[in-house]
Length: 187
Image (cartoon, rainbow, N blue to C red; front, side, top):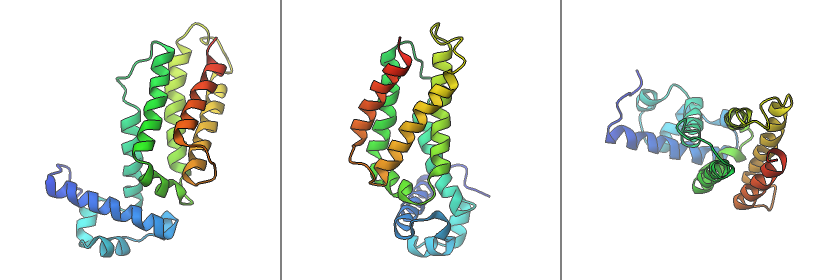
């Protein structure tokens, strides 16, 4: 049974597991090369302690994804202006920048695509709901395609940044994303 009520000890244990997981991603480069045995040995915890918190290595990776989704997609956030959308874009990039070391390691592995697909879907869905509600786009049959095209480009640039395959910083990608959004969606 997984620990449901996190006390200080459980929070500390999960933190140790997650930091060790990130180090192992850096060492191995691929999620599927990390074993629970290796993780518990490097984290200096019992195997049963790991299984009290997670079912598998993939659950640790999924928790990282869930944290990002939770932080970035607060359902209480409303959009009533272009500035609100730009603030939303800023929040996404600010979170990635604040956690850059962790996400650089996670996304530099060979298996970031599931995470990026989730990220794209949440961003696309949120933007679609906002834009579909505006008079300029309420009847636009290509809106979903245009939003997907936009978010695909951004997420690929984020991935390229974390894999050191571009010289653009997260701040520059953020600024260009807002510029592109304005060109594509503001009339």
